[in-house]
Amino acid sequence: MGVCNLLTPVLSKETLMTPLRKRMIDEMEMRNFAPKTIRLYVDNVSRFARHFGKSPDQLGPEHVKQYLLHIVHEKKRSWSTYNQALAALRYFYRWIVKGPEVVMDIRGPRPERHLPVVLSFDEMQRFFAAIPSFKHRMILMTAYSAGLRISEVVNLQLTDIDSQRMVIRVCQGKRKKDRHTILSPVLLQMLRHYWVAARPVSYLFTGRSLSRPMSVPTVQQVCREAREKAELDKEVTPHTLRHSFATHLLEAGTDLRVIQQLLGHSSPRTTALYTHVSTKLISQTKSPLDLLEEDNKSRKLPSMTARKAPKPRVKRAKKTSKKRPASSAGGRKKRTTQAAKTSKPKKGPKAR
Image (cartoon, rainbow, N blue to C red; front, side, top):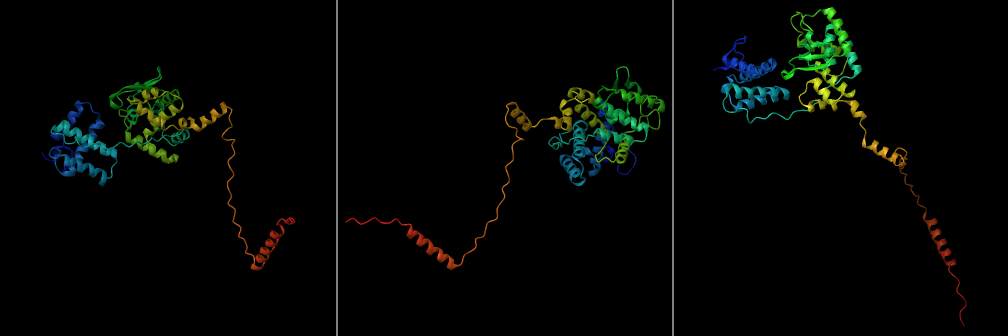
């Protein structure tokens, strides 16, 4: 099989549904992979094949290592891109080729831990005020108000808004999971005004056609334009609104387990990341020095702040002694000798 057996032909601009590509797509669909995951995996294996000009089932472990180093050193891609390529190749050789383990000994890099970007309330006000379109402002306000991912907010339908129970139903979110999140009364009122103006039929936020949802790139472009217009010095994406939602709830005193359920996180450790972001929680934490001061007050000891700091030492300039002339020194020596003679005790009378 040639290189065309996988994904993209070398000599033609059209995409061919070749046997190897079809087998890979069918295998992932049977495993109920998300369409985005299928596209990423197929694209990564296709780029790997094009790099060497051979079919991937004719390449081995050394080719995989060379390609991954090429991604990092020459292409200067991020480690997340490296991990995507490694996961795609590992899946391909294990489940599609089903040969000897080609990628078994290749380990992924140590994950980088970055704190998410969070907007303050003032920055949120400026950001929303910079969006001129009512529909675009509504979709981003909905994402912030309910803590939704961009793929979840664009696929919201009218039936997902439950005004009786004041919840929003998220259907088939990340990892094919359903969940409920909060429906703000303020957001509900604004959504009713939006419905009167836009008259959506199925999807809540539609694109040019009422039968299709708004595209993800459109929402991302709106974020970039609003950030520039609001003159924010932070990088703002639709996911930044989700981070801000979680952090603002945490600072308001919401339990971490509740935030975990609203966000749809499987592990509480993922949600615990926002405790490192919340500056309000950090500023409310007492330093051990403050606790020591409180202990001094309870024991009626002097306060540490009342103790005076020692005065700084001032270095005095050394006095230079002037040399006296030799005559005066000699006269002083004579005077001291005469004084010593006069100070001697007088001898008594000699015994006869």
